Image 1 (cartoon, rainbow, N blue to C red):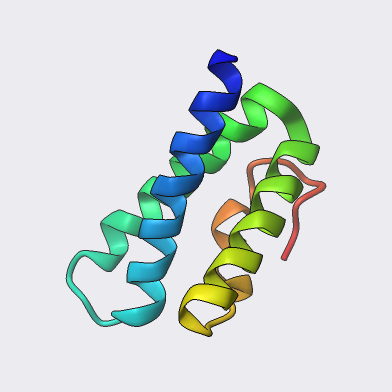
Image 2: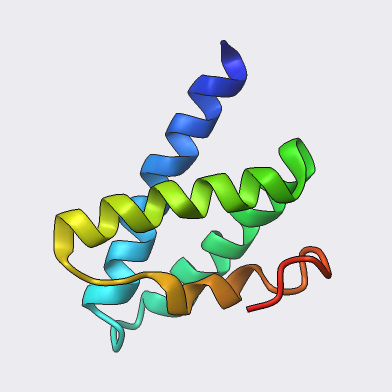
Length: 88
């Protein structure tokens, strides 16, 4: 149960972070938000491996595309380097 709650909280945080980066790319906050996205990716990978990254980004892409009409796929590169298997 605790893992599910943590994943849900991280998903919500990632939604907020990615949405800010996509809607305000020139914001002075964008670099720190991207760093946090990378940190969360490392946490997800440490907890659940490549599957956790893929599953999370699938959910994020669906929600963000639906909610704001923007594709977050270009931000997948923020998780490059966490594992050689994730290379976008």
